[in-house]
Image (cartoon, rainbow, N blue to C red; front, side, top):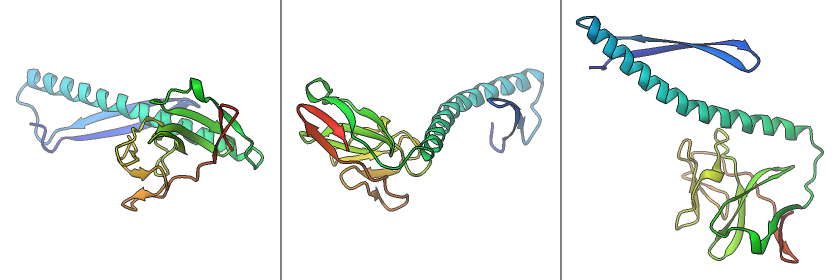
Length: 179
């Protein structure tokens, strides 16, 4: 059951930040009776709701990244030093997200030293701050699985662009800065 089922959706803008989504399910054969039809409709509706909720989070995150990118276009060029934090207070097991004029970056520990890399996947602006470092120093975008070497920024497998160049990481007087 379910083979050949089609789902058609149409989104209509209601206002600047509100849409209506019309969803219709098409089965290759009519259900045997009304109880089966009701069961199938409820099942498909529940499954679609789960998928929609997952996509909503992804698309909201992508729209936020696009909005941030557009806002930075109006900022003057040049990157001033941006404080990451006191080295003694930074969680060495955590990922520290830092906003700069050049973009959003992750600061984290790798092999007993602080490193920095882009927090935005070049493919569709996925949240690389949610990616975990593997034992080789690579991260994988949680949205579409593109992998990157954080030391070089290169896309592993060359199926996507490389990461945006990260600013220099500087430690001064016990504080960590992006410069």
